[in-house]
Amino acid sequence: MERRIRVNTFLFLNATELDAVEIPEGAGGGSGMLPDFLPGILQRDLLKAYTGFFGVFDSQARKGEKRDQRIVATPWGSGAFGGDVRVKLLILWVAASFAAASLEGGQKAELVFLVKQFVVDAKEVWWKEMLKKVQDSGVGADDVWRALLEMEGNGTANINVLEGIVDALGLERPHVM
Image (tube, rainbow, N blue to C red; front, side, top):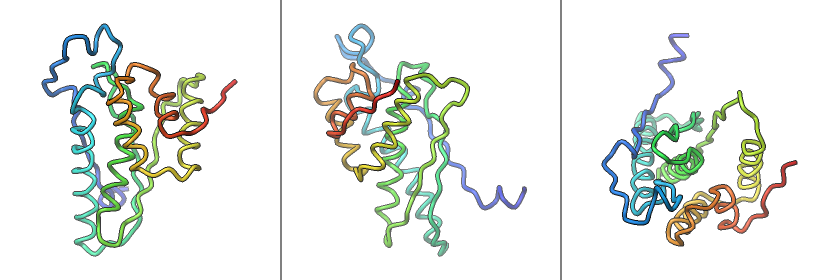
């Protein structure tokens, strides 16, 4: 067990919501807009995650380690500050993909998301189906990033995040009974 821990790299990212964020008049709170979509927050979260992933990938590449990466991520953000864990998950996905692609030789990164197992409701089933649909469609990280920015830019960030991303990607919404 001790040897296994040594070969793994643990990456810790702090939450944007712990930084000072000023909510403009009419945004957030009463409008229902998620803090994740306030101006500059998506970019700041992407940069934090990208920096962490790139550091890990680059360090391993410098050591001559040419192996595919398996990134296991628990939900980032508890929602205590009004953010959406699904938005954070998409940001992690995009950041890891961008970091892996930016290295010479383009390492492959596989993200495995640990979704809470104790509550399986229609929303969770819908989310799993949506992720599978995105993966199977061949949509790239750049497309997912553009979809997030489109939601931020259109002021549509107060709609259902799942539906907004699927619509912005031009994919059919999953149907869950």
